[in-house]
Image (cartoon, rainbow, N blue to C red; front, top):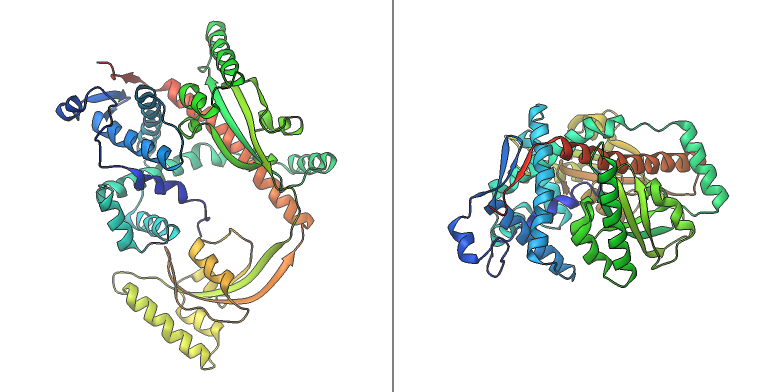
Length: 439
């Protein structure tokens, strides 16, 4: 099953606005209407149209307003959004050249998960899209492209990440000697002044000078988010450089050690890396207490809708199975005979012990509300309809195995972020890009 966080970022497409009144991003409004489909950038063998840029800028403006962030000048926001679109276009083209295809069923499952993550039915979700002026077919194309790019990153970056047992042990030793709780979380703001691949000494000096200038401005009191929007070359620039709450082990290793010396509000930089020069600000620290983890032993029966079995049919079939179990029939036997999840069906529907976050949200939310041995009502996820039964629960302290698994996961995340940043920078430098905003 897909992790609970995997789809949330995709819902940003709901922000694609239909209203362009007052959005003066490429000159006057009348000019935007006259030449709405002129080319604003050539990216290898593809193009980005002005209409696409207007739509995406409108989306980011809406997102910034919803988060109560102040808006940067239109000219600056346009440049930032266009650069983000260029990098997305490069990845999409690379995925296409690599022969990555996303089938309709996969797209359907992702859309179903997005709707459920936002507590909507599919019909409610489509209605919401319509109210935002978004064509459903266009939304599906966006989702398909997003999945293809994820698969590309999986093959180009994720699969190359290796974590050795020695790295895990070193991590655990460092955490122990520092007395660091694995639950302490840090909120960093980040600005990256990028240097090109194979940068010349002049390139490096130019980036350093820019970083020093930005650093001086934020130390004098300039809003850090505004500085990131205006100057940062990082993917989080359009979020004001906000990296989100992270454990120390999830912070890029380049400045993870600064958590030991920085106090809330402190600013450090420029910090040199192969990508360029970084400026960071510690915006907050929280947590630090230890707690146990609740694990759940659960089993289920899955009925998956298809061309023959409708949603209503699948739900009714599960209700019939539920009544048979309540009447004394064996859950395991019925799971073996009826469940469409073949991996668990052969084990009588058993999914084993699961930890928080391991299952998709609708399933996990229903499971967490259940008493032990109770049967759920039919629960819908992107995989179909489930009948759930919780067999046991237990509190698990931080066992050695759990800590090692956590260490492996967090080292992988750190490496992945660093490698992805380097990979994207390399793709951008190697691509042919012609920006025509001023033409």
